[in-house]
Each structure stands twice: as structure tokens, then as C-alpha cells.
Amino acid sequence: MLAGTFGLDLSLSKGLEFGVNQSLRSGLVVAGAVVVIALLFWAGVHNGRERRLAQQQMAPKMSMPEADRAGGDPAAGAGMTPALQGKVAPGFTLVDLDGKKVSLADYKGKPVLVNFWATWCGPCKIEMPWFQEFSQKYAGQGLVVLGLAADDASKTIIGGTARKLSVSYPILIADSKVEEAYGGVSYLPESFYVSKDGKILLETAGMSDDSGGKDEIEANIKKLIAAGGQ
Amino acid sequence: MIALGLVLILGQALDAPPVKVKQYVAFAAESQTVAAGKRAVLELRFEVLPGYHVNSHVPRSELLIPTVVELPEDKGVTLGKAVYPAGVAYSFAIDPTEKLDVYEGGFKVLVPVTAAAGVHELKGSLRYQACNNAACYPPKKLDVDVLFTAK
Image (cartoon, rainbow over all chains, first blue to last red; front, side, top):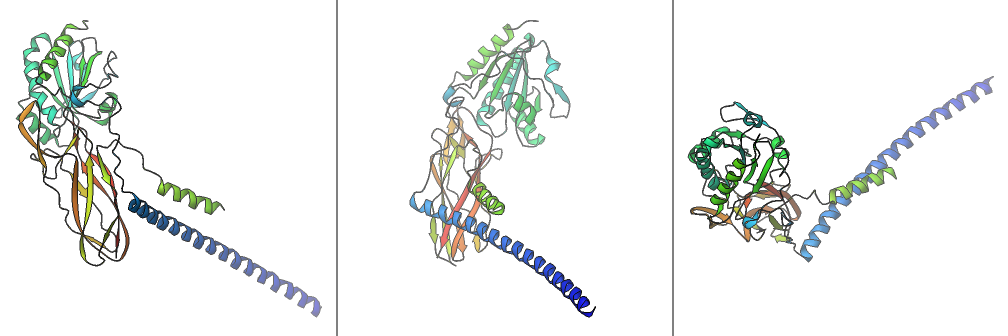
């Protein structure tokens, strides 16, 4: 009986010891793994930094970026790939400088020149007084010019810039949705000539870097007015 | 093993090149050595893509977006106010009356630094807005990874 009790006590004690050892071992394994991971991580970051430093010491790099070399770059008068030409102009509803909603659909049946611009864009600000002149000259033929400011500047700054350029046609605040719909607007200025049937007759990016730029715009406006009756 | 695999993947992710964004300026990532614990100067060399220009640090109009280097301080590194070069005059051919102040080709930004001995890495950026002779591009941020040794 005594022996039996002892035997039971012994096995209980062994069991407890085994349990404690098991927990201790598991704890040590987890702690060890954490230390190893931390060491590997530190070594990776440290080695990466050392490697980059060594690479830079061997050969300073100044690789020129690709930019927009592969087509579509509106440099020196070259136009972008006309991705939307011939397609129905993406609709939009935006707010003007007074907070009033303006939709492209409001001008259905009219020739509309949609011009993306920004306050920081020099070529845009050269073109805008021309658009102002043409919006008045061809108003009798239904021409509408909409200036879409693709700009993070405040409405006050955008409005002030438009006033300084004597622009009185509607200036709307563009959003990322309309920019995306019109191909991303990755450079400015960009203009879309929307004919009376709602299709994009022409799209242009950048400005001609010669005195012919204004004449080119007027020629495009004339084509726009002549095209796409309803 | 799983943990080791995760660490390797994480390490590769840290070393992987970032998603490519169209840039018009390149940064010359040159390693530099400065005297530890003393005021020194880090030279950051940039190159504007041929045919393009970016506004200088002090453009002539408040509407224009200036070129700015943003470098965070790191442990053991104290930075001073960056010194920018003067720009050059630029006009669009169609409007020679309006003069802009821009950087074309190469330009250097000098950053005063005092650093403790060791290898330091400052991960910052260059904010700029580029144009060519016909169009302008939205403002961009270029990663600027400055590695230098103080000894």
C-alpha cells in the first residue's frame, strides 16, 4: 500500500516534471527561434546596406529615367497617341469655381472644347487667352470651352489665375475620375474637341512650340464646329 | 524552416526595386565619406532628362512648384538647411516675355550634416515639377537614398 502510494506519488511527480520540462523546452525553442529570426533580419538589413554602399563605391549610378520617351511624349509639337479620338466623350459632372455643378451633358448638341490645365503649367497659361478669344469669336456658332483644372491648388488660386488670364469661360475642378476617363492626363495641356454628336473629333497634348500654335487651335475649332451635326 | 522562409521573402521584398514611376530627374547615388562628429556637407547630384527642365528651388512665380529635397534625420545624424543652386532663365519660345527660373542638365544640392561614426542611410525624396518645351507634367517625388560613412 505504502509502496503503491509511493509508486503513485513518484509517477505523479515524474508526470509533473515531464510537463514542466515540456513547457520549458517549448518556451526555449520559441525564444530561440525568435532570436534566430531577429538575427537573420538584422543581418539581412545590415548586409543589404553594406552591399548597396559597396555597389555605390564601385560605380556611382546615374541612369537616366525612361520618362515618356517611348511615344506619346508631347515634346516639340509632337502629339500624343489619340486614344479617345472617334469615341464618345466620357461624361462628367464637376463643380465650377462657384460650387455649381456642370455636366458635359449640359452642352449636348454643341461643339465643346474640353481643356485640361493647371496653375503650374506654363504652356497651359499661354493657350488659355487664345481659348478665351475663340470662345467669344465662335460663340455664335455654339462653341463652348470648358477649362478643367487638374490641380491641387485651392479654388481661390485657380480662380485668381483664370481671372489674371482674363478667362471667363467655365472653369471646373477636375477630379481623378475625370482625369482617368480622359486617359490619365499625364501631361498638360491636353484638349479634347467634342463634336455635336458627343464624339471626340480630335485630341491634342502639349502646345506647338512655335507661333503656329494659336492658328492650329483655331483650325481645330473650325473643324469641330463643322463636324458631327445632330 | 517556415520562419526562415518568411525572413528570406521579407529580406528580398526590402531589397526589391520599387514600382517604376515615370521620372524626369535621376539621382546619382554616390557613396560619400565625411568626418565623424564634425560639420560636413553631403552633395546630392541630380540630372534632368535632356529636353526637360524643372523649376528651381526659387521659381519666379508663387504658382510654380519649387524643387525641394526632403531628407529625414536619422539616429546619430543631424542635418542643416539644404543649399540649392541658382536656376537659369528659361522662356517658352512662343512667349519669350515670361522668364522662368529652372534647372536643366545637372544640378547639385548641398546638405550640411553632422554624423556619428558609422554607416548611415537617409531615405528621402526630391519633389519637383518638370516641363519640356511643349508640355508640363504633374509634380513628382523621386526617391533619394543617401548612403554615407562617417569616420
